[in-house]
Length: 401
Image 1: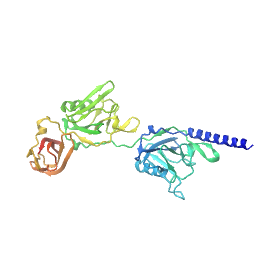
Image 2: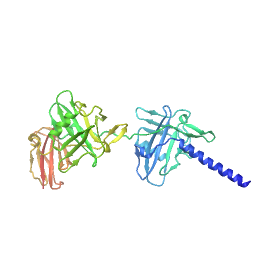
Image 3: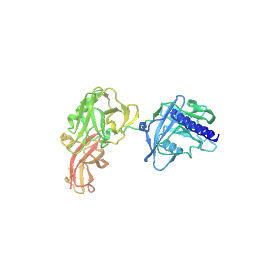
Image 4: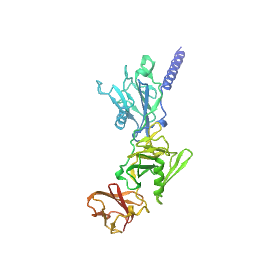
């Protein structure tokens, strides 16, 4: 009899484990490989999910950490600090650590609690009765908060819910890095209208920008690229079966080309859809090509490139008017003087042969005034020195001994 009771007890235990695991399998989750936005640093990872109702929406973040474990509250605090769209409220609780509401607002979705209220979270599909400020997570866990209104109660006696809504990965935040037209050093074309053209390569991750001037109401992106390619022998692009196949920059020392699988372009931070041979650009536009492998995906097929944009320096062999800056002494030892041709605010910049900005200053100067440039801290070698005044740029080679 004891044996039978023990067997029955064992079978019940096995059945209980089976049903619990079955419940866990019904709870929708997401593979960490599909997470698009990771917060924190460290070798350990957990997935954090919230399931709202009205509309039924489940969103997931990834969280990385060092150490053996992390509390759910720490995860939520760090996500809230990194992602302005996410927040939560526990302030109304008598004890301060029960959850009142969780919010997500990206300007389109505005998610918050729907009656009758939040239930305790689940970890890997299993309910936990610890408060979120003490409940710890370890590497590989997923944790999900859910609104009871959109959950399915599978064990009424123990208030166990699952949420079957497919979990979507939250897209990372990203702001398209830009550059002011006043910072552009090398302009191609003529006219009263201006656009800025930039390319973001990967491996190494670097973004370079040119300026383009034109007359008329608009200019086609391909026309801008063709004009820059004709004026600047360092820049080139190739067209393949599906559009632009590669964009390259080669000045003898720098060799940039496609590192990922394809190129995309944005106009004023928004994805362009017309095709580069039909995309119209207007005065003041900013267009950027980017290698997808160094982009941040902020929505489906919407990417941004956050690398700081650098102005392309004038290449050797540009027209004489652009290279007519007066620099003396040249070669220089500790200092040199450049002659300013336009009165007012002038920006004097020094670049090394790789295009890296090594010195810059802004000065108010009179026409014909000589401005001192300190070269004492520069290594011996060849540099470019330029003066930018009212978008007129004059450049010359500078040799430092």
